[in-house]
Length: 123
Image (cartoon, rainbow, N blue to C red; front, side):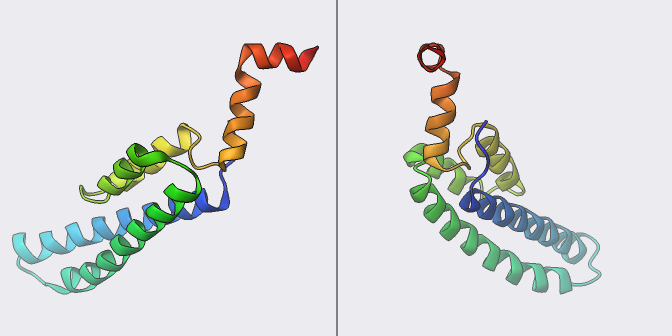
């Protein structure tokens, strides 16, 4: 499995930040609309989540382009920012599939797992 690139780590950090602010906003909405105690959580996390959402979209487009995800992976990553906390699921999926690594590292890792290439390298 290829190691995560700097851009891949940036994507992962921003995905977690986006999910954290989503969770804060959800708690704030419960406090405001269910318990009726305060709207401070919505005020604070609404602003933080708005900024994190925009940052996630920009980072996803940049990382998707530079790491050559293709349109499907990029759209799935972008769509993950809509439901609460799913940016973490997208980050885990991209990490496990090796798509947070640099493209040349993914190609090298694929080449060493291909039996035909392995036998060619061994001889």
